[in-house]
Picture: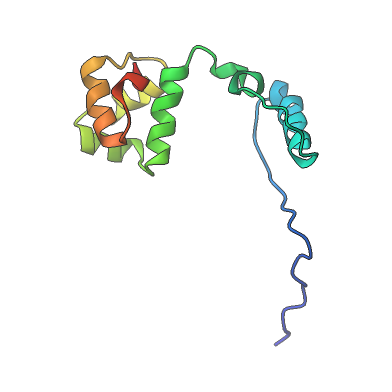
Length: 116
């Protein structure tokens, strides 16, 4: 049996593979280059991902759910909200509403107003 012949990397560099909209690729590349150059320039989410403008609530719902490590189905069980309704809320096909925002926020450990 041959031993492992590959040497471990000698630097702290890693390769990342991202899937982004074609139109956003130059912005993401520019941002990554500025990080490597240790520039102080900050980019807004809107600059890098303009397709999310106007979808802040839906993006917040998905982000909080992901942060908690929950699937839509798991969140549905915790909140009593049907999974397909959560999917529709995340995809801008259904409004969230105050009462549902409160149920979701309790399970997602966030302020319900972030979902309104």
